[in-house]
Image (tube, rainbow, N blue to C red; front, side, top):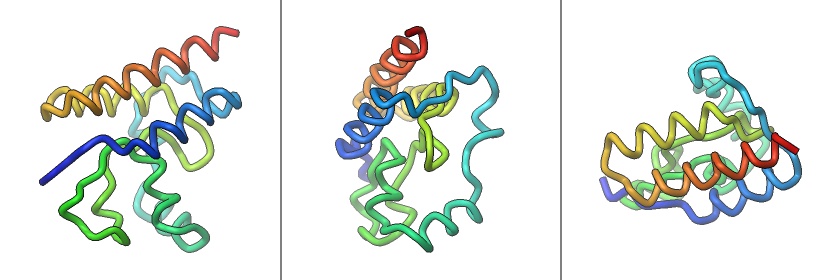
Length: 117
């Protein structure tokens, strides 16, 4: 797997945070993470590239038009979730993707700062 940081997702997440489209939740990401049926419903109305904007990781060994290309989700297709960023950061650290871990941490700090306003 050739995983790298998805810069479009980072840019999109920053924009959503600045617009206040965030959830500073304390729950478990499993409660908010879209399941495959929610992902498929999103893809019925949106391009795969838009789906990719909700994922910090990009597996370039997978086809551009596949869900399998995108990893480390951080939101529910509407808002950025604090617990989603924490989950992405932790998983990236466990799997040795320092660039994704740092991006998730930077976004987490931006979310918490925006939520405190």
